[in-house]
Image 1 (tube, helix red, strand yellow):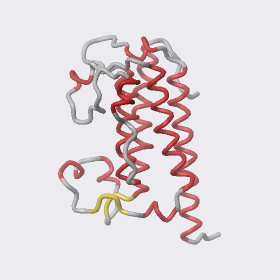
Image 2 (cartoon, one colour):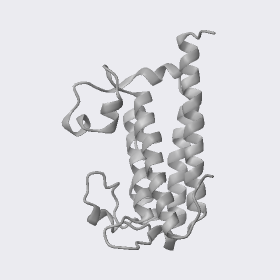
Image 3 (cartoon, one colour):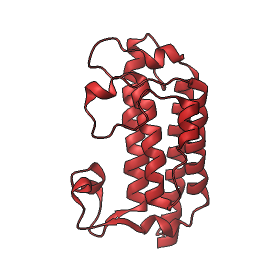
Length: 195
């Protein structure tokens, strides 16, 4: 059986939609089965709290969505006042000792922010024209801050496409931090997110 380009793109989009939905469900389950004290807990100096992994991933996801879609991030002063993070920045490129101070102040506010960010991405993925996955969002040659990134390594000859961006910036990045969250949950005596 052979498929045409449209069928292939539809298949890729469907797979991405399902994988993102599943990953988001892990994040929802994780926050629903932890307390704020567990999320903010640091068991030894130099180890990042779960609060860092949660806030970092959701906030960077929110910001990178703009590079993919042109829509502004939802994070603003109002969200900051609701979530009350100790550090109102995703922390990419910041030293571990600084980001180890990250804490979430209002856990319900964070859950609302997370749901808003993930719901917006899911709705976009489900409704977008699959041909849009091929659009280049960052062309070669890359600026220095992009050239050494994981997404630059994954990209094809033209540069980082919308598909690369969703795969690298949202899906693979999200799974990486979910792994950190699962490890930290184990230190707290909590179960993993999947069997």
